[in-house]
Length: 137
Figure 1 (cartoon, one colour):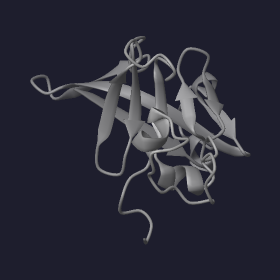
Figure 2 (figure 1 turned 135 degrees about the vertical axis):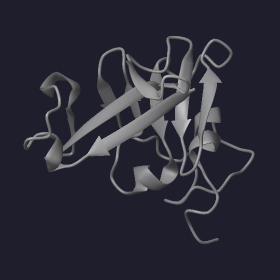
Figure 3 (figure 1 turned 180 degrees about the vertical axis):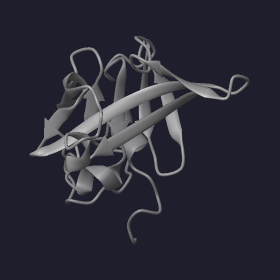
């Protein structure tokens, strides 16, 4: 079992005790993405270097979905994709552990500023970041 933790804010650089090479700036805000393996028996968290070369994680409000990037090659490997809610609040679209970069959220194709699932112009990534319950329909 893996735990993904996304942190942001000035406390990361102001005495936060974090390695500065693992902190990235997104729109002027210090940010950090971490992955831990949960050692249930040992009751500890073991730091990892990402989610794995053959996978990507889509972080939701109450759950995370892991997707095989071998079966879905358009999705970036060893990356964490944030959900629609965080993207709308000015956060990045995806964080890539390989080169420690964050990317802009993809704009919904042929749609207004809100995400509504449809059968046209959407990629798998669009469906996985869209979570019901964050916006009023």
